[in-house]
Image (cartoon, rainbow, N blue to C red; front, top):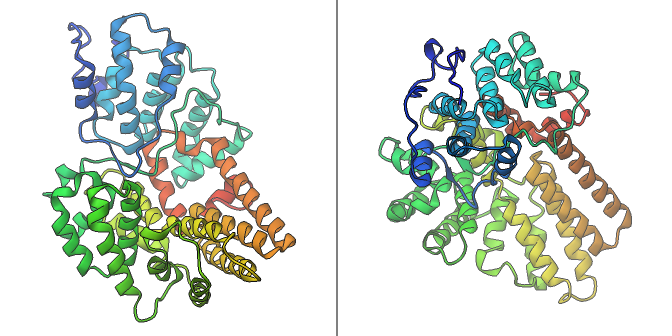
Length: 464
């Protein structure tokens, strides 16, 4: 394997720290190598992150023939995470990849993105001139982005203008780019941060790492009973539901969380979201509605506001809290804000409504349909992708129950349009580019109004 004597600029002074290209290569056991390479990251919240399915494709495309090259591909996963999050280990891991498999597509793509992220424009061009990647659409976009970024006001506009200038190329089937950055990925070892975090920071960390929180359960319960933060409790509730009913944390913490939310809703709830928690307890999501339930729901849907504070307000609060504590504080703040939207409330309302359809008589199904439509309207006003999607699903089913064909067609049309906005982001593969600055910068406009953010990529408005 050729050494990188010409590979200047990858680290300080033009060298790759800790990569001794002339020394014998150590063959570590795979488990030890990955544990070392991952370092402090990542820990997945909820169900885990999307698998890196493209690694096998990369191996096949590169025609790996030696043990050294085969082991080098083990670095691709942690190196990609490091590039997404801006982890300090990124340069070291990317240097190892260059040493073992310099002309592989993942090596060159990740190194080019890291160079672009750090403003090393010449290194971007050097990496993208390598065989195997230089003639790809992905390389063309990165080269154009390297030209535009120094003159652009920020990363997102530089990327957006680059994609537009290239004719809006379609990267949905790209075998060069990794899978999207999962919103439920936590770039930290929460356990290691626990001792250095303040008490306020600790409670905000809990929803992101419930699987490791059993030793702190009594402390968590104290915080639950004392807090008045509805979004924090909603985020915690959402993650607890994801653990499953047999989880000790689910069994021990979820009932007190729901009890506290019920207390905060009394004597009269301020928002429909808060009011639905005691109305839709976790123990009854398959139970059909009785007529008295519909009477209660009718009172609740009169509330004009879905949630308070807004997703943006809670996002800004969490980002300030995580700044200096976590890598990619905006990413983690958006994770919390998304969890606090409590999409499960809409899902469970839908599930109970479907279970009720055969049990209701007379005009009660139409009545229930109207109530679902009103809940959907409150959700659609929020502007996040999750809330809009759930709101439209409720309205589609609600209009089926009421028998209003026109409103059903309108709801389906709006839901299809939302899918077109999603496809536009998939077309440019926005969340697949391992550029920490670009990904982090996108969090604030998404928290402010994701509808506006998505529509701009579909050509329906200005990029925020």
